[in-house]
Every structure is written in structure tokens, then in C-alpha cells.
Image (cartoon, rainbow, N blue to C red; front, side, top):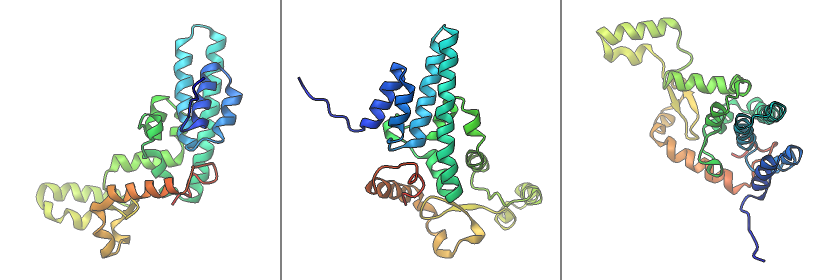
Length: 216
């Protein structure tokens, strides 16, 4: 009999238990998963799809209940990370997970319609930053209105009125007025710095509940 070697046994066994309906056992393997937030979100999406594919009302309700359990687990881990370091917790939301189809946590949450998870302050802050682009959240309505007026008359003076956010060498957004001249030179190095962050995270071992936001 040939042996089967699993690169991520906890993840493989967790997903197998989900498909077999052994949710309690899947929760046990989830505790050993390298990506606790991503793993829980993937299980939520999977259970949601299973709920949509069945016509049995009792089974549908059971799948939805289990999906909510995994969503809550993802929320708990994210809350711990956000309480310790909000900036790096947001990095966990958009970091691509190679073992889950190169999806990001925020994309899995949207695909699974995880309203409660998306309403977490960490997710809301991240989505606000995406919506604002490189504009600093410290801009008041007067800054934005002034920038709009200058955009029509004197566009070269917009940077003097509107505040912009920049990336530090770890890929974290910072306000331009809190950066040193050396930090400003690092704006174009965001992608390479983020890759270095991921390599450092991998070299320090699996991400568990207590290490989810300590990998740097």
C-alpha cells in the first residue's frame, strides 16, 4: 500500500471532516491549523455552499449553524490580533493564502457573506482605507472640500491642503505628517517589504491562535 504524505495534515483533515459532517472533529484539527483565521473562513464558505446545495431543511439549518461557529472562531482570533496590534492585524486580512486558493481572508469573508466578521472594527478600518486610497483618515471635511476646489483651480497646491497616507517598510499605512524623510523614501518598496514580512513569518513556524499577530 502506497503512503500518502500531506504537507498540511491539519488543514487536510479539517476539510475532510467538514465534508464528512464531523464538525466537532474539524474544530479540533482547526486548533492546529497554520492559518486559523483563513482556515475558519474557508470552512464557513464551504459549509455555506453545502447548505445551498441541500434540499433537506434540517440539514440546511445544521450547516448554517456550523458555518456561524467557524465565523465566530475567526472573529475571536482576529479580535486578539486587533487588540495587540491593529495595523498588523489588518495585514492578515489581505495577505494571500496559498493553501486556500491564493485567496485573502477578506475575500473569503465576502464570498461567504460573513456579515458579522465583516462588521468587526478591523475589517471596517481596512475597507475604509481601501475606499480612501492613499488619503489619510485624518482629513476633515474641510480638507476634502478645499482639495476639491483647488483641484479645479490650482491643482499643484492640493498636497498642501490634503493629507496623504504612506506605507512604512512593513507595508503598514502611516500618516505622511508622522513620517521621517527616510520613511518617505520607502514608499516604493511596499511590495518587496511585504514579501520579506511573509518570508519572516514562514521562518518562525506556524501561525496559531496566540501567534497569529506576533509573526513579525
